[in-house]
Length: 100
Ligand code: FES
Image (cartoon, rainbow, N blue to C red):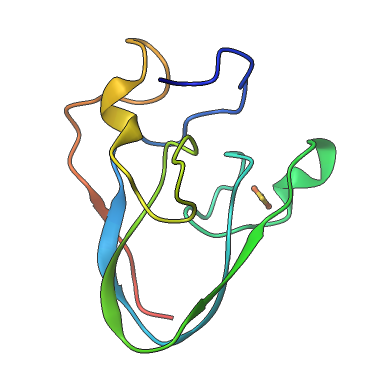
């Protein structure tokens, strides 16, 4: 169930899946970044802050792109429960990410 008070944009209704190199990342929690899933500073006019994420080793990950996950920054399947019309197309496939 999604939070009815959550008015953040939904950049994408599917996770951003790909191989992630070990390192430190800042996951966009506000939904406004133009560089999803990463923060680009656009949160400055919102009440949200980026989430610092340390990835210990190279691994395949699924970043949440709907911004409604209960396990940020990782996808937990919540995007499948979003109301119709919120965010992008549900039928679009996962977006791949480039390595750091
Ligand atoms: S741009 Fe969304 S948290 Fe920074």
